[in-house]
Length: 241
Image (cartoon, rainbow, N blue to C red):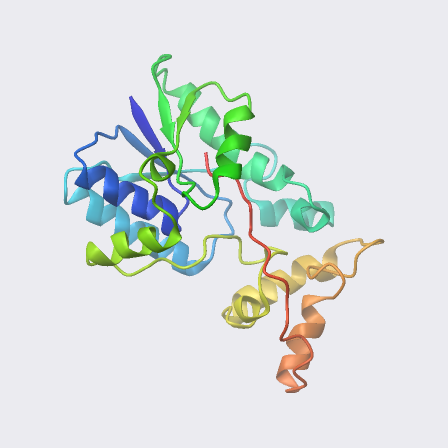
């Protein structure tokens, strides 16, 4: 039985389109929702789910953490801290993506014959190597790597299907966001991100930008100071299945 881990981005979207084109079956498509995804990710996931269903594939099922804090945003505010990725750790991804995904699979009593398809592309085999080494209770498959599909091929596949390309899939308050991604957020999300930052009890870092505060970026942009328009291109690196 094949199950797809859908992240809402380019790779997993292209993987599903290509699986369908090749006549491969898919029993379940799971989207692990941190509760803080960007609005365009939620709207794209809804649209793509309807597109899949219209072509005989299953709808995309969303799963969330059901522990003490349902969303990462609530956990950050409650515990007065920032997402762990700001310090280089992946516990936020583990708690709000990997665990809900694995728990849902376990709750369904699907048996041992389960293979999870993950959308690492041919340009990132190192991520597949790390994923293969993790002790998850299911087999993993990386179709895009099998098919030698890199990022460009994934984009071409989506366009050839007549679909728009999805935006970056990440929390709206992700510390790995680029400057233009931060500044393009709608004001209500900027306000929520700044609330997380201002509420956090920090010692070794300045804020969501690690060495700088998002609040200072927003203030400088409004003042047209242009002090923050260079940033390191850091991939989100969140769990994909």
